[in-house]
Amino acid sequence: MIRARVSPGTIRGRHGAAAGAHRAAGRVMDILELVVRTRDGLALRELSAQLEAPKSSLLPLLRTLAGRGYLEQGTLGEYRLGPKALELGLGSPAHRAWPAIARPVLRALMERTGETVFLGALGGDGTAVVFVDKVESEQVIRYTAGVGDRRALHATSSGKVILAFLPAPERERILRALPLKRYTDRTVTSLPALRAALEEVRQTGVCVNLDELAVGAAGIAAPIFDRDGRMAGACAIGGPTERVRPRLKPLAAEVKAAARAISALLGQRTNPQPVPRKEQP
Image (cartoon, rainbow, N blue to C red; front, top):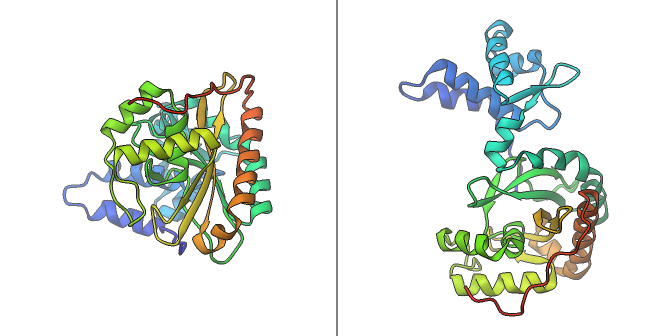
């Protein structure tokens, strides 16, 4: 996929051009949209430069956002997403610790496979997988997506892994409400076919996705479990299908090993409960 960077000017222009838009509200959204795209946070001077706004007008907004928990300030004065913003976006503030805990494993996985690596979690509304961290491939042609980006559960390797290892009642509730949108000719768009695919994921412990979300894009994901053996998220690689397809077996083994390593770092003490070969809806 071609990597594209959204410029601050584009963000600002979009809000500013909206009929009847409130200037201060638009500026708040500008700030949040910039911060969510920056892993290490942004200082006041950086926000001022990128938004082309006076520091004196940004500071009260930043203080308000920090006071309400939507931003937090680091030791060097940089602003990052706070617990309230993360809770709204990801459904659980526990995911805040994931990037720091899992990043060394993600980095190592990228170096071993040469492909972009993602850490995914179930979105707060239960309709999508949200990327909470990534380590991008260094190859010229690579899969790219941003931290905070959302992807369809039924059409991605991360989404299917998450669905497969959710408790059965929660999984069924989501499946019955999930719009099975068709993205390509390979997208699974029926509940029986999706349930069969999830059963296979539970048996193999890995999900391979070839061209289901976008033609030419492939993903391989494995589940991450918390200290009690419950599904916490997914570790995945993404890359061009023509590069991933010939290496499916070794790449799947690498992803599964990385997911197990992250689970151990999260304190997993028990194995996930085995599932029967056939489950009734």
